Image (cartoon, one colour):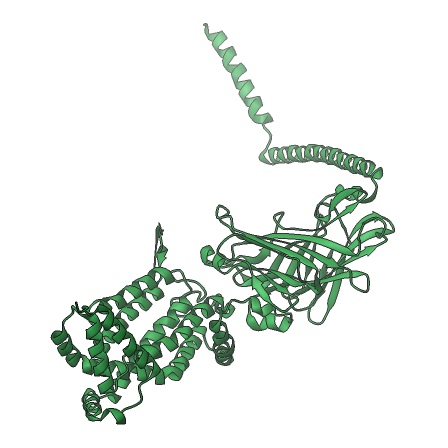
Length: 611
């Protein structure tokens, strides 16, 4: 390449790069161009979105027109088979209820002032697993209103304080023939009025003066321990003779009541209930309760079918109650709703109802922490039972003083003839004026109270969510150690249950020292606390806390009684009793006379026969 050619190429490249640099847009010009392109892009997307929206709207309109065209030829209730589910919310200070246009039913119930164990809104039931419908025949077809679409009279209802209001869900057969569900709600309270009204359907529905209702619901898990929740969840009902009864809480169960009227049916969970009540009572009712353990978040499934006769004003009036299982709340509603709270059976129920509950209510008015209320309740109980405790201790002290003489008799008679040995013991008791059962009878008298508290605390709504010391919730167990589930014990260790067990073992040890127990009886007492540990490990910490306090106060009582009981004085009194002639001693009791006679008969039966 010659010099002239090289110079020419260089000039051309210089012109090209120079023109590129001189014609390069500024930063401001670049920014303006990018902005213009962005705006063009937005316009293009807006045009596209508008086109899509227009297409969708046209499709929806076409769908609606098509549906209207589809239903235009349908007659009667068939027209209500097509629709879209929508929700109407009605609420007051306590309840938030969703009504569904599909079925016109209560779709969900939330108690606004309460939470689940993990802080979630407390919902008694919700979703499509809840069904409520009238079943009848119309136009030779089986109708279930749960599957039909209702029209609401209002989009929502909110009432408070002294206000009240109602919402009507209407199922139309024709413009002048329809079925109404009227829901009425006061500003406060847990009651929802529910009235079924028929207009112009007398010739459409055979036997329209009677309605058949099917109601079913799956009760969701609300508490920490679902096993305990299932233990206290059951279907309850009240018949016209004021009897309140329930289905089994431990197995699947069902019942049909046709021989008498039923006033209400309740789907009772551990601490909350859903009740359907008829003021004029249901003429027939059936109730079913089932448990599916594979449904980990469902406690139980419940179902009821009821029949109600039309009232004198031509309507079917009923009430729903969605309420905590707090005794006085339910009692204030009337109709014996409080009787579904399990306070025990037989005498236990009366102890809790007329003794424990009034004392608890008295202590509750001081607004103390519930841990302190349980402490005060235990102290009062121990003071009331202190005479029995003293008598029991005194009787065991007498047996302890007699033990050396009993050992002498045992060595003399031997263990080969237990009948004769027992007879000699009875003679010694008679001479000494000692009742061998004197230490057991006071304890047996106290046993109903111990078992009454076993039923009282797990059913006590007031303990729900209440904390004390390390126990976050006195209505369920407290756990210090968790592990994989093992049979009997579960998946945790309850600290309060462990303390209760240790205190019971210590109590058993000192009790053996007082009574002088020997042999197998000495060790049997140590087995019971171990059984308690396995049994009560998943029970409410409030219950184990009470048993722990009872043991500790018993230690204190026995410590104080020990200063009042002198073994030397007891021994001197026994020796004095032995010196008294037989005719000056107390008349033999019927029990002792029977024991003597039984021993004589047994001795005669075991004595060797003469040849």
